Image 1: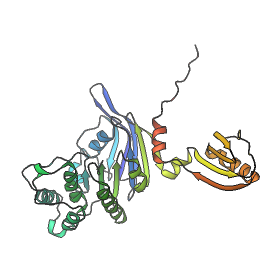
Image 2: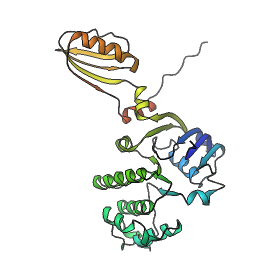
Image 3: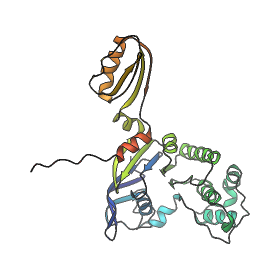
Image 4: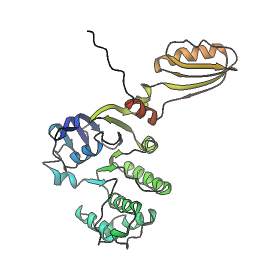
Length: 300
Protein backbone atom coordinates (compact mmCIF):
# COMPACT_ATOMS: atom_id res chain seq x y z
CA UNK A 1 0.00 0.00 0.00
CA UNK A 2 1.48 3.32 -1.12
CA UNK A 3 1.76 5.84 1.72
CA UNK A 4 -0.14 9.11 1.34
CA UNK A 5 2.78 10.92 2.99
CA UNK A 6 6.29 9.53 3.22
CA UNK A 7 9.55 11.14 4.24
CA UNK A 8 12.88 9.37 4.63
CA UNK A 9 15.88 11.10 6.17
CA UNK A 10 14.28 14.51 5.53
CA UNK A 11 16.60 17.46 6.17
CA UNK A 12 15.85 21.18 6.25
CA UNK A 13 18.29 23.82 7.47
CA UNK A 14 18.04 27.55 8.09
CA UNK A 15 21.61 28.77 8.22
CA UNK A 16 23.25 27.02 11.15
CA UNK A 17 19.89 25.72 12.45
CA UNK A 18 19.00 22.17 11.43
CA UNK A 19 15.21 22.25 11.74
CA UNK A 20 14.76 18.74 10.31
CA UNK A 21 17.53 16.29 10.97
CA UNK A 22 16.72 13.09 9.10
CA UNK A 23 12.98 12.90 9.76
CA UNK A 24 11.19 9.65 8.89
CA UNK A 25 7.40 9.88 8.64
CA UNK A 26 4.83 7.63 7.01
CA UNK A 27 1.09 8.36 6.89
CA UNK A 28 -1.13 5.57 5.55
CA UNK A 29 -4.18 6.18 3.33
CA UNK A 30 -7.41 6.74 5.24
CA UNK A 31 -5.87 7.19 8.68
CA UNK A 32 -5.78 10.10 11.10
CA UNK A 33 -2.12 10.45 12.02
CA UNK A 34 -1.17 12.47 15.09
CA UNK A 35 2.01 14.52 14.69
CA UNK A 36 3.35 15.55 18.08
CA UNK A 37 6.19 17.65 19.38
CA UNK A 38 6.71 20.89 21.31
CA UNK A 39 7.53 24.24 19.78
CA UNK A 40 10.80 24.08 17.86
CA UNK A 41 10.67 20.34 17.27
CA UNK A 42 10.15 20.69 13.50
CA UNK A 43 6.41 20.05 13.07
CA UNK A 44 5.54 23.23 11.20
CA UNK A 45 8.70 23.02 9.08
CA UNK A 46 7.68 19.49 8.09
CA UNK A 47 4.20 20.65 7.15
CA UNK A 48 5.58 23.49 5.02
CA UNK A 49 7.82 21.01 3.18
CA UNK A 50 4.84 18.68 2.61
CA UNK A 51 2.83 21.58 1.19
CA UNK A 52 5.64 22.63 -1.14
CA UNK A 53 6.16 25.92 0.70
CA UNK A 54 9.74 25.00 1.62
CA UNK A 55 12.26 23.10 -0.44
CA UNK A 56 14.01 20.28 1.46
CA UNK A 57 17.79 20.25 1.69
CA UNK A 58 18.15 16.48 1.87
CA UNK A 59 16.35 13.18 2.14
CA UNK A 60 13.22 12.01 0.34
CA UNK A 61 9.65 13.33 0.55
CA UNK A 62 6.47 12.41 -1.30
CA UNK A 63 2.76 13.23 -1.05
CA UNK A 64 0.50 10.91 -3.11
CA UNK A 65 3.75 9.64 -4.64
CA UNK A 66 4.51 13.16 -5.94
CA UNK A 67 7.23 15.59 -4.93
CA UNK A 68 5.49 18.48 -3.14
CA UNK A 69 7.99 21.05 -4.43
CA UNK A 70 8.19 19.95 -8.07
CA UNK A 71 4.53 18.87 -8.32
CA UNK A 72 2.99 21.44 -5.98
CA UNK A 73 0.00 22.31 -8.20
CA UNK A 74 -1.09 18.68 -8.50
CA UNK A 75 -0.60 18.12 -4.75
CA UNK A 76 -2.55 21.25 -3.81
CA UNK A 77 -5.58 20.11 -5.83
CA UNK A 78 -5.98 17.20 -3.43
CA UNK A 79 -5.10 18.86 -0.12
CA UNK A 80 -6.90 21.15 2.35
CA UNK A 81 -4.74 22.93 4.93
CA UNK A 82 -5.79 24.46 8.24
CA UNK A 83 -3.02 26.42 10.02
CA UNK A 84 -3.05 27.23 13.72
CA UNK A 85 -2.93 30.98 13.14
CA UNK A 86 -5.21 31.91 10.26
CA UNK A 87 -4.65 35.16 8.34
CA UNK A 88 -7.57 36.42 6.25
CA UNK A 89 -7.94 39.08 3.59
CA UNK A 90 -9.06 42.00 5.78
CA UNK A 91 -11.56 43.52 3.31
CA UNK A 92 -13.24 40.26 2.27
CA UNK A 93 -16.06 38.84 4.32
CA UNK A 94 -15.74 35.37 5.75
CA UNK A 95 -18.20 34.04 3.18
CA UNK A 96 -16.30 35.65 0.31
CA UNK A 97 -13.06 34.14 1.57
CA UNK A 98 -14.60 30.67 1.84
CA UNK A 99 -16.07 30.91 -1.67
CA UNK A 100 -12.73 32.06 -3.10
CA UNK A 101 -10.81 29.22 -1.46
CA UNK A 102 -13.35 26.67 -2.68
CA UNK A 103 -13.21 27.98 -6.25
CA UNK A 104 -9.41 27.80 -6.18
CA UNK A 105 -9.88 24.06 -5.54
CA UNK A 106 -12.33 23.82 -8.44
CA UNK A 107 -15.40 23.52 -6.17
CA UNK A 108 -18.68 25.36 -6.75
CA UNK A 109 -19.56 26.85 -3.34
CA UNK A 110 -23.27 26.38 -4.02
CA UNK A 111 -22.73 22.64 -4.41
CA UNK A 112 -20.63 22.28 -1.24
CA UNK A 113 -21.40 21.88 2.47
CA UNK A 114 -20.57 25.56 3.08
CA UNK A 115 -23.97 26.64 4.45
CA UNK A 116 -24.31 23.53 6.63
CA UNK A 117 -20.87 24.10 8.15
CA UNK A 118 -21.51 27.81 8.73
CA UNK A 119 -24.48 26.80 10.86
CA UNK A 120 -22.63 23.99 12.65
CA UNK A 121 -19.72 26.25 13.53
CA UNK A 122 -21.98 29.24 14.33
CA UNK A 123 -20.09 31.57 11.97
CA UNK A 124 -21.52 34.77 10.47
CA UNK A 125 -20.19 34.85 6.89
CA UNK A 126 -21.05 38.56 6.42
CA UNK A 127 -18.33 39.80 8.82
CA UNK A 128 -15.16 41.25 7.31
CA UNK A 129 -11.95 39.34 7.90
CA UNK A 130 -10.41 42.20 9.88
CA UNK A 131 -13.27 42.06 12.41
CA UNK A 132 -13.10 38.34 13.21
CA UNK A 133 -11.72 37.05 16.50
CA UNK A 134 -9.01 34.36 16.40
CA UNK A 135 -11.59 31.63 16.96
CA UNK A 136 -13.78 32.88 14.12
CA UNK A 137 -10.81 33.14 11.76
CA UNK A 138 -10.15 29.50 12.62
CA UNK A 139 -13.76 28.66 11.75
CA UNK A 140 -13.36 30.25 8.30
CA UNK A 141 -10.41 27.93 7.62
CA UNK A 142 -12.31 24.88 8.91
CA UNK A 143 -15.37 25.60 6.74
CA UNK A 144 -13.09 26.02 3.71
CA UNK A 145 -11.29 22.74 4.47
CA UNK A 146 -14.34 20.56 5.18
CA UNK A 147 -16.89 22.03 2.76
CA UNK A 148 -15.86 19.70 -0.07
CA UNK A 149 -14.12 16.29 -0.15
CA UNK A 150 -10.32 16.17 -0.38
CA UNK A 151 -7.83 13.32 -0.30
CA UNK A 152 -5.66 14.80 2.46
CA UNK A 153 -6.29 17.17 5.36
CA UNK A 154 -3.20 18.83 6.82
CA UNK A 155 -4.23 20.22 10.20
CA UNK A 156 -1.73 22.29 12.19
CA UNK A 157 -3.27 23.11 15.59
CA UNK A 158 -6.71 23.27 13.93
CA UNK A 159 -8.72 23.91 17.12
CA UNK A 160 -6.58 26.81 18.31
CA UNK A 161 -8.92 29.51 19.65
CA UNK A 162 -12.04 27.31 19.58
CA UNK A 163 -14.24 26.72 22.62
CA UNK A 164 -14.92 23.14 23.81
CA UNK A 165 -18.27 22.96 21.98
CA UNK A 166 -16.63 23.86 18.67
CA UNK A 167 -13.84 21.36 19.36
CA UNK A 168 -16.53 18.68 19.50
CA UNK A 169 -17.86 19.85 16.13
CA UNK A 170 -14.34 19.64 14.72
CA UNK A 171 -13.98 16.06 15.99
CA UNK A 172 -17.30 15.19 14.34
CA UNK A 173 -16.18 16.68 11.01
CA UNK A 174 -12.86 14.84 11.18
CA UNK A 175 -14.61 11.53 11.90
CA UNK A 176 -16.94 12.08 8.93
CA UNK A 177 -13.99 12.88 6.65
CA UNK A 178 -12.17 9.75 7.78
CA UNK A 179 -15.28 7.63 7.13
CA UNK A 180 -15.31 9.03 3.59
CA UNK A 181 -11.72 7.84 3.07
CA UNK A 182 -9.86 11.09 3.67
CA UNK A 183 -6.37 10.91 5.19
CA UNK A 184 -5.46 13.46 7.89
CA UNK A 185 -2.18 14.63 9.38
CA UNK A 186 -3.06 16.25 12.71
CA UNK A 187 -0.48 18.35 14.52
CA UNK A 188 -1.67 19.44 17.94
CA UNK A 189 -0.53 20.34 21.44
CA UNK A 190 -3.84 19.06 22.82
CA UNK A 191 -2.80 15.48 23.53
CA UNK A 192 -6.26 14.40 24.64
CA UNK A 193 -7.59 15.52 21.25
CA UNK A 194 -5.02 13.44 19.37
CA UNK A 195 -5.59 10.47 21.66
CA UNK A 196 -9.32 10.63 20.92
CA UNK A 197 -9.12 10.73 17.12
CA UNK A 198 -5.73 9.41 15.93
CA UNK A 199 -5.13 5.93 14.55
CA UNK A 200 -1.35 6.28 14.77
CA UNK A 201 1.01 8.92 16.11
CA UNK A 202 4.55 10.09 15.47
CA UNK A 203 6.42 12.00 18.17
CA UNK A 204 9.33 14.11 16.94
CA UNK A 205 12.21 15.67 18.80
CA UNK A 206 14.81 18.06 17.37
CA UNK A 207 13.72 17.28 13.82
CA UNK A 208 13.79 13.50 14.17
CA UNK A 209 11.06 10.96 14.91
CA UNK A 210 11.54 9.33 18.32
CA UNK A 211 8.36 7.23 18.50
CA UNK A 212 5.84 6.11 15.90
CA UNK A 213 3.01 3.59 15.82
CA UNK A 214 -0.55 3.02 16.96
CA UNK A 215 -1.44 3.97 20.52
CA UNK A 216 -1.68 0.28 21.37
CA UNK A 217 1.82 -0.33 20.02
CA UNK A 218 3.30 2.62 21.88
CA UNK A 219 1.53 1.74 25.11
CA UNK A 220 2.94 -1.76 24.85
CA UNK A 221 6.40 -0.24 25.23
CA UNK A 222 5.54 1.56 28.49
CA UNK A 223 4.57 0.74 32.04
CA UNK A 224 0.95 0.32 33.06
CA UNK A 225 -0.40 1.50 36.40
CA UNK A 226 -1.88 -1.19 38.65
CA UNK A 227 -4.07 -0.81 41.73
CA UNK A 228 -5.33 -3.93 43.52
CA UNK A 229 -7.21 -4.77 46.72
CA UNK A 230 -5.76 -7.99 48.17
CA UNK A 231 -6.76 -10.57 50.77
CA UNK A 232 -3.10 -11.38 51.61
CA UNK A 233 0.29 -9.72 51.14
CA UNK A 234 2.15 -10.04 47.85
CA UNK A 235 5.91 -9.76 47.21
CA UNK A 236 6.91 -6.24 46.18
CA UNK A 237 10.17 -7.19 44.47
CA UNK A 238 8.70 -8.99 41.47
CA UNK A 239 10.57 -8.64 38.16
CA UNK A 240 9.33 -5.71 36.08
CA UNK A 241 7.35 -4.16 38.95
CA UNK A 242 8.28 -0.63 40.03
CA UNK A 243 7.32 1.83 42.79
CA UNK A 244 5.23 -0.80 44.59
CA UNK A 245 3.51 0.09 47.86
CA UNK A 246 1.20 -2.10 49.97
CA UNK A 247 -0.91 -0.39 52.63
CA UNK A 248 -3.92 -1.93 54.37
CA UNK A 249 -4.29 -4.52 51.63
CA UNK A 250 -4.14 -1.94 48.82
CA UNK A 251 -1.35 -2.40 46.28
CA UNK A 252 -0.27 0.32 43.88
CA UNK A 253 2.59 -0.07 41.40
CA UNK A 254 3.71 0.38 37.84
CA UNK A 255 4.68 -2.61 35.72
CA UNK A 256 6.62 -3.21 32.52
CA UNK A 257 4.80 -5.12 29.77
CA UNK A 258 6.94 -8.22 30.29
CA UNK A 259 6.38 -8.09 34.07
CA UNK A 260 2.58 -8.09 33.90
CA UNK A 261 2.04 -11.89 33.67
CA UNK A 262 4.16 -12.52 36.78
CA UNK A 263 2.41 -9.77 38.71
CA UNK A 264 -1.04 -11.09 37.79
CA UNK A 265 -0.05 -14.59 38.89
CA UNK A 266 1.16 -13.23 42.25
CA UNK A 267 -2.03 -11.21 42.71
CA UNK A 268 -4.17 -14.25 41.95
CA UNK A 269 -2.27 -16.25 44.57
CA UNK A 270 -2.76 -13.46 47.12
CA UNK A 271 -6.50 -13.29 46.50
CA UNK A 272 -7.64 -10.32 44.43
CA UNK A 273 -10.74 -8.47 45.62
CA UNK A 274 -10.52 -5.65 43.06
CA UNK A 275 -8.10 -4.80 40.27
CA UNK A 276 -7.57 -1.93 37.85
CA UNK A 277 -4.80 -1.85 35.25
CA UNK A 278 -4.47 1.42 33.34
CA UNK A 279 -2.27 1.78 30.26
CA UNK A 280 -0.26 5.00 29.95
CA UNK A 281 -1.97 7.95 28.30
CA UNK A 282 -0.61 9.63 25.20
CA UNK A 283 0.46 12.52 27.43
CA UNK A 284 2.62 10.14 29.48
CA UNK A 285 4.14 8.68 26.31
CA UNK A 286 4.86 12.18 25.06
CA UNK A 287 6.50 13.26 28.32
CA UNK A 288 8.52 10.05 28.40
CA UNK A 289 9.80 10.66 24.87
CA UNK A 290 11.08 14.07 25.96
CA UNK A 291 12.46 13.06 29.36
CA UNK A 292 16.22 13.76 29.50
CA UNK A 293 18.22 10.57 29.07
CA UNK A 294 21.27 9.95 31.26
CA UNK A 295 24.51 10.64 29.44
CA UNK A 296 26.43 7.52 28.52
CA UNK A 297 29.75 7.12 30.27
CA UNK A 298 32.78 6.74 28.07
CA UNK A 299 35.74 4.82 29.34
CA UNK A 300 38.90 6.83 29.79
